[in-house]
Length: 205
Image (tube, rainbow, N blue to C red):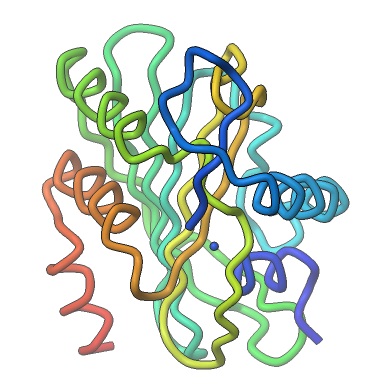
């Protein structure tokens, strides 16, 4: 049995919705309701169950990208971009599963690598987040999958977003979401990588 955190990770995914007049994203009431239910389930779980830091402990404006292949011997990648004290930075951590059959617990492999980015690069990424309506994308994927790679992007901010009226959002996709993967690719390029490169490494693992 996988833990609740793994269940959410694999079955978390596009939306268009909006609660504020200042938000330029279209509204989808059905997705709004789906997201509300998804967040209730997320609140009952925690990334700490599998060995990752929970978003509730983030004390800066943070984006986190987790690349989570489903095959057992693969490596899980965590990219975290933070801004709040000093210059914005990205840290990159790798994990391996240490419990392959029960709860898929993870253990960090080596030391995290850090990249300092500029305020302009941070602002450019935030602009793309807004343009792609990330804060109003649906949380949970309708696509069930047993094989492949989950791409999970989280955002935690100090103030509520004017589209979602929340300061935290999470989205997961496997395939067929160009706008979402454009965001992931932009994130990776700030850390001297790219989605194409990551896909290539995953296929080789």
